Length: 309
Image: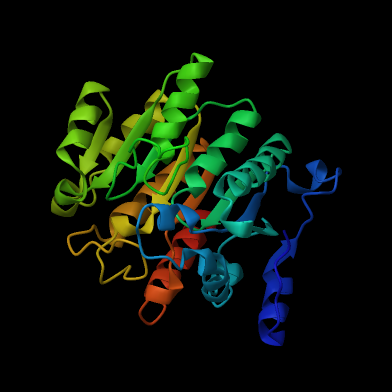
């Protein structure tokens, strides 16, 4: 699970601004209680199964490189410490096992009083994150910033991919007799089938179109409504929600994607609410990135989230 840092400068920066932690140890509770714990999910098997552009398995490494170059640590997080628990890796393209391992790590962080911050990896990270949230005994609302609903039906053999995580979560909740509170922000009209739009309508799932966000990016009423209705929220950000000029390094770039102002303002409000149970960023694909724009955007999103206002 551990992160390997080879560059001396990166090692020095890492030592100054983050602290490594071993989730296999049984005494992490007093350490991470009330703190944020970074965890990488090195996997793009779900993207491969979804016939997307692979490469997101190297997303956590690209994120850390850009994150450690930021100066937020000098004037941002105050006395808070960001712990880094290393990486979960998808071995032998066994997505289900990797999601299970991620779930175990997330469960341990949450039950120890910490907040997981997970960097993917494809959006199959969401189902692994949910397994840990569920294992910790929580059933929060889900807020997905995404161009896609990711509510597709699972593949043959009950296998998921990067387009199925929230359908899998919904079906799991139904088995538990729990309600599915799912909100999606940034939806693209031509990135989702009519069948999916009809399904969302039938299930009364609330969502925001990207075009509406672009028309009024400072309107936070959708986010504020979610916060007012729910005690705990799982936030997941698929980087393909952004305009492709900002985030070219994703599986499915969106030329009509949203700008960064809306998401940055939203995460500030969510952070202030104290209701975020877990946070992840998905689809960071450095092999398709230009000038590290997508990695830099990801790093700045997390830095803004960590900032003590």
